[in-house]
Each structure stands twice: as structure tokens, then as C-alpha cells.
Image (tube, rainbow, N blue to C red; front, side, top):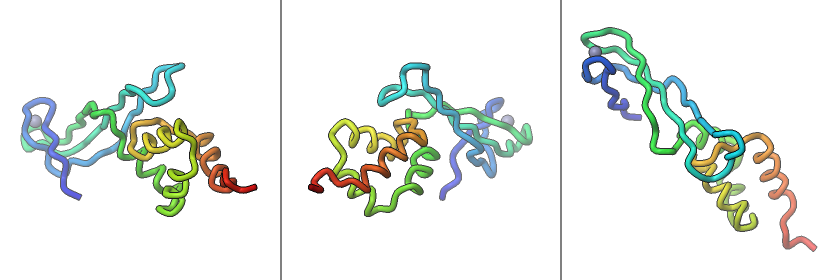
Length: 123
Ligand SMILES: [Zn+2]
């Protein structure tokens, strides 16, 4: 993966060895669901002038960490099956979660896993 292009917060020089340390996902109480959720990424790296720096960056409403963590819960085949079987609203939520635009939690995963075990077409 290419090094992210993160400028020093003091001088704007590009940080060397910049890496993502964590993401903060902010969901306002009562607003859990698809919609504008804010999150930011924290990077650290070495500025040639200022040494070790931390830099926070607001994101474009997309969380790579959340998306890749969810991807570990479901195989490609399972994701395909879910897209085919979930009701519209649930599919949108699932897709948004995979895209990092929805702050999913364990309950969501349990529900989706349950959907996999119960195809709606089963008589
Ligand atoms: Zn600097």
C-alpha cells in the first residue's frame, strides 16, 4: 500500500513513514443508521523539521477500518448470498457497512449471519 500523503500540522511538509494509527467514528446518539456520520483518521509520522507528529484528518465519510473488519466476518460467497437474499432496506445497510459508510455493530453481524442460515425462499 502506498504511503499516505500526510502533511505536518505545523509546517505542511510531508510526513515520512506516515501511517494510520486509528480511526474515530462519530455517531450522534439516536442517529445510528445510514446517513452523515463523521469520522476522522489519526496518522503519525516523522516531519523533517519537527520530528514525530500526529495528524488528524477528517474523512470523506468512509471508514476503511470498519469496512475491512466487516469483510472478515463474511466470505465473498456469503456477501453475494446476502445481497441476493436480504430485504431492500437491510441490503442497503449491509452495502453501506461494507463500504464503510455505516457504523455496524455485533448485533448487525449476528442478524446478517442469521439471514444466511435462513433463506427466505425455504418452505
Ligand atoms: Zn513540520
